[in-house]
Length: 405
Image (cartoon, rainbow, N blue to C red; front, side):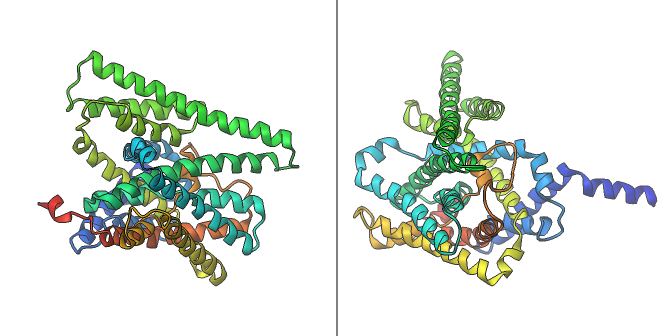
C-alpha cells in the first residue's frame, strides 16, 4: 500500500505528467464546450485555472520554466502562422487600409499609456506596459479563426493586424527595454544609445537568422524536389533550427519566426499546400500555450476593486482606440469595423513577445504596475476569447458548418 502511494505521489509530481494531464484536460474540456456551441479555447482556460496557481497549484512558474523550450516550439508554430497570414503586397497596395491597421495598433498603445499615466504610474513603466499592450495575442485570434473556420475581408484584415501589432509592439518594447535598462541607476543619453543598439542588434540578428533558415528551406526543398506532402516536415525542422539559433544567440525569436511566415507567403512562389498537415500541431500549440497562460494567472488581482477598475478601463479603452482608428478607412462597413475592434481585444504578455528561455517578472515595473498588468492578463484569459469569437461572428465570416461537414 505504501509503495502504491509513493508511486502515485511520484506521478503527481512528475512535471511532464502534469503538462500532459493539463493538455488532456484542456482538450477534453474544449471538446465538451465546443459541442455546446462555446469556444473550445476555454477548455485550456479551465484546465489552466484548475491546475495552476489559482487552483491546485500543481503547474506554477518554475514548472513552466522547466519546459520553456517546449512552449517555445509551440510558439514557433503559432508565430509562423501569424507571419504567413500577413500579405505585404496588399498592405502596400491598399495604403489607406494598411495605414488604418497600423494606426489602430499605435493608438492602442497611446491610449494605454495615457490611462497608465493618469492612474499614477511613472512615464518609464507606463511606456513599457503600453508597448506590450500594442500587441494582439496571436494564440487567441489564430485559435478562434481556426475553430470557426473564419474567412473574409474582416478576418483577412484581422490577420494582418495581428502580425503588424506584434511587430510594432516588438519595436516599441525594444525602445522601452533600452530606456529601462539605461535608467536603472541613472539615465544618460550614451547609456540609452548603447542599450538601443543592443536591442536593435537582437532584431537584426533575428532577421538574419530568418533569412538563413528560409534559404536553407528553399535549397533543401529544391535539391530534393520535395513534393507538397513532404514539405511540412522539412519546414517544421527549419522552424526548430530558427528557434534554436535565436535561443543560443539571444536574437529576437518573435521577429525571426514572423519573418519566416512572411517569407513563405510573400517570397515563395510555389503552392504551399501543407496547412492541413500542420494544423493539428498548431491546434495543440494553441491549447498548450493558453493553458500555460491560464495556469499562471492569479485571480486574486481581480478582487482588488481599484486594480480591477483600472484593468477594465484599459481593456475597454484599447477596444475603443482600435474602433476609432478604423474609421479612417471606408473599406470596411460599420459592422465589420465593430467586429474588427472586438476581435482585436486580446493582449500579449511580455513572455510571449520576447519568446526567450525565462518568464521573468516585468523589468523596471513597480509592484502596482505589475498588479495592473496581472489583472489585465487575467481579464485577457477570461474575457478576450469570448469577445474575439463574438467579433468573428458579428463579421458574418464564420463557416463552422463547412468545417464540420
